[in-house]
Length: 238
Image (cartoon, rainbow, N blue to C red; front, side):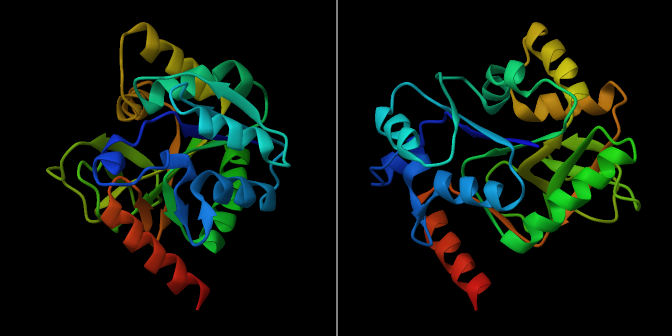
């Protein structure tokens, strides 16, 4: 299975708050964010791995080039995570499913391993994608996910103003198949510009999507998020 990391963002809010390192090289629990993900990917059967990083932070590229694991490093400044995914679409195409995540996701490593197993089973059952969701909501602009009782995804919303018994938000971790790349191609041709619009298009075009709940997923957008992430990682180790 292929694994990909979307790391082309500039981390401007972190820089404004005094964090000098590019976001992929920020450390949580003593590990660079990008290194942590690469380690977890290897532990969960990564056949090949790729990273998209922007061309304005050469230190990120230089760091990636030193990693022992073979990486497909794609250097390109992109306007959104959706565009970063598209930059890797040719590499991702094929018969096997693949995992994509943004570089700043912090989560329980044990839950991640279970998710990978469940994703592979879901693909065998005919699902086209399995998205990580969480009921821990600590994002400035969360993407709400309407989830049925059997964890089929029915829709993605910018607000919680929709009928549902449970409130989940997207965790920024996407298990996908090659069929979803056809929808991505349509989104690009239609001028869409956000990952959440790509996810909405998956539903609109009738693909079968399933949700997998994590206890907590943290995003590193602000300096205060680093403190939360450090605390969370420490708690996971106790």
